[in-house]
Amino acid sequence: MNKLTKLLFSVISSVAIATSAFAGEFTVSGSAKATYTVLGNTGTTGTHAIGKGLGISNEFTLSASGELDNGMTWSYAQDIDNATVQDDAKIAFGTDYGTVSICVSECGLSTKYAFDNSAYGVGSDNGYGGGKSSSTTMQYGKNISSYNNIQYSAPADLLPLGMTFKAGMTPGGAGGSANASSHSVNGDVTGEMKQYAVTMAPIDGLTLSASYYDFGEMGNKDGRQKQEGGSLAANYSIGQVSVGYGETKHAPAQRMESLATATAATQHYENDAYSIGFAVNDNLSLSYTEETSEKKNKAKSVTGAVTRTDVELEITTIDVSYTIGGATIGVSNSEHSNDSYTTGDDTTETIVAISLAF
Image 1: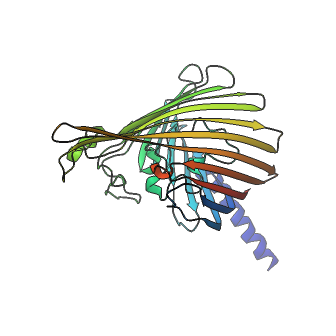
Image 2: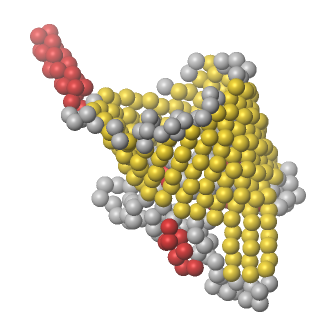
Image 3: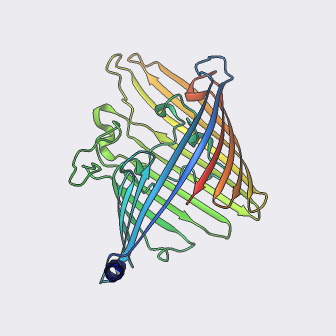
């Protein structure tokens, strides 16, 4: 029995060594977070109910990487969120001329949050994010990671000033499973989305970022305005302080002509935000973030009369976080003015969380 055990151990060890040599490396990492959230209404409309709740979220990442006989590198990553069996996934191949990645709900290129220095998270990206539902959250535009896509990343040493360049597109068919061909861009427009992102670090501590996307000529389908948008951001760190500022514009795929009233209509969003972070020490961090989004509507009737209706949504967030080894305790308090772009609908949201990384 002892000899058999040794023999089995030798075989398993040999397989493991062969696997390591020919198939690359494999790692597993993850995180888990428990939250207690309190949601309140301070506005005049009373459209939000006061609520409290406990929750737990988790994410596991399976990663593998290796090198081919020709020197080309490869990598694979698969995320598993909560009870989802399969979530975000990416296969990438790297050469001296850049990296090509095939992504399923992964590989975001938007720089919309490049201004962020928050200790816990940006108010529009926390909890319910400033909207009664996901469809009314603060509008920062589209990100190619919402769709299945293919991307190119330029080599790190190709461009000056620490500049990086990435470009991605969604093909005409982009289902998530192998051999899938169905493609629906969240019900917006059926067609190809293209997105580009550039970052640079001209001096120590300063990072500049920009991104742009559009849905091409298909964005005008059925009398829609072309869906496009972009972001600019600057972030500067000196000592224990970090300051960031960003601007974003987003034009959704909206019908330019109403079938019911034959009125021409356009709509777009203009956002700006700034974020200040302060690292008190290696464990304790504080931050203040303010985000403003202006929704601009313009309608022109058959008689030529023009009607403009603008509303401004504002979210201010104060965060505190404290790290103890692999655990982080965070507190976030957000105030939302004209929530969901509804005038007079003001809300508050407080989140207490403990996060684990492993």
